[in-house]
Image (cartoon, rainbow, N blue to C red; front, side, top):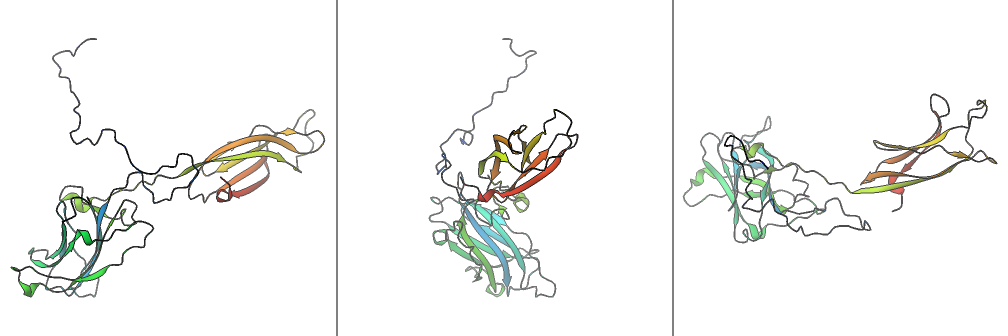
Length: 305
């Protein structure tokens, strides 16, 4: 084997120090035999997040385009500037924004969550609330979403109490990627100032099933008369499921009856929640153009496993 020519350097890929790319065992329950259906909210590797939904405020002191800052021991994010609905009081701004912060139960045992409101141009403190992370509820689907609540804004010892007033409507909970709020949440994993433009993307892993259709026989078909001598009709069955299309071989005709036989299996792949219907078409393909002799629709959900 020849070495590098012209003194070219050979790049050696170093092994990541954090081990993110090394093989590891993923705990969890997997349906290997297919005997039990896995709910749609089950995850291969659940990761916990601290969700913070900021809805709106009321009774704030004089401000302009206020924003909310969220801080934990390992994360800091900032909301977008608030909006005021037409005809509303500027003291009652709205955000309607959800944040998903990475959560580690071990390191967050003695940590706190600080949520504060700040004036836009002056960056003056308008008030805040503080939560003990050990008291934050855990929500697992299909649990109902937590309703936002009003929290009175408070100030610190050295803050101007005349500027601290009003309430902030929010909800805080601990969940996973299966949470309904995860797709719309703003991620804290991106570096500032890009966190305000970064959202997670959820790729659902569908539960797939093999659907086997056994085509046995068709009776009392209306075959086109006056076929050329020694010409047997070419009858086939076509199956359609979504974008999948499969056709049987030519059916064999019984000499005693007008029935056609196939005894052939057609295989499809169906994805949950199994809301599609299987379409079976009986076609006469003796001539140049196929002629539809009949069809039937079978809901996939009615099939037995």
